[in-house]
Length: 497
Image (cartoon, rainbow, N blue to C red):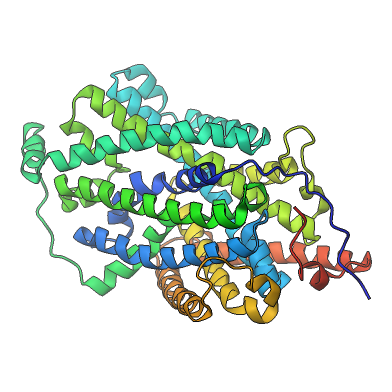
């Protein structure tokens, strides 16, 4: 009879407090989800019109429920690679791998997408500063590709230096992001639609006529499914569970703080833009160019304020990269620790205490995401893949809350968040239902999209990648069994600290 392996230190260091954890989650969430998606949505879901804030509210409900599930599980199982550990200990090893591999793939592609959309913001900064030559140079696609790769790999090396380096990078950038974002909010609420129309007239641009609104149920659910991606990122806190101080308390607290701060910021920010800019103008502009919040409001502001707003948007996108890289690398590390993926991924840098091999493998997939966006000429496929992947992950997390007491009662008793079992069942069951509805709506929209090739749809791409990942999983688990390892025994207890 096989027994669990002897516990040994992982080499990871518990150096993240509540503030550092929350900044990791906040910076992983606020980026394209606030500056681009709520406005490019007018092109992706034609007819959504003035329903954007309603769709945001609908997307927030399952996001909050998913965050509660993460907080419950994180309080009981505070280890690196949170989602893998949660589902593998609550349901089965393969369920844990399925959830976390889906998450890993989606987030790595998203890292590539974010990297690729940062250079246009740098171009807009140069244009606002009237650096015409620089702005023209940044229009060149080869330079955009090179800058995206440079940004990505810069933050790979920041992550290589350990979680303290990541936290020290994120916190000042987060403050800059909120200050600049606050300027967008003030600018939006300080002006009116009439002022914006007058500005367009002064530029000899006519406001298009307001179209008839689309039926609520034909546009709001698909829009909510896409906007759900804006709330993805708090899971990075759970993935860093092996490096959190007092993790059973700090992880749930950081998740709650992140959701509250980001949710309020999202609604104020989006409402401010649509308060001044007519949605049908946004819809018309989105058909001919990539629209952003600072780009829409900049004409109302002085050149200096315009530069600050665009710079804040660039900073918010840059902020996505360190925290997301932290999260995805810990997923790979957790698989290798349990023996379901190549053991090399569990190596920890002897000086910096970071899982450097897992970090570089994740960065390579993100690099593929950059090249994909470059050659496809559109970043929304990456967003769609992220939504599909994370909805699957969050559904499995909610199922883990429901299954944990029966599968692993000792770990279930360690849950400190919502300790009432009836309340846990209500929250997790509601999350499963709402997340499943969003996944069904998102999948239907994806499969009925007008595209020329199959790989322009997120659903088949996600499925093919999951088959590839599962093949590696079954190969490694068979090799583990041949070495005398018992995967069920390994996943009956928490990984070592």
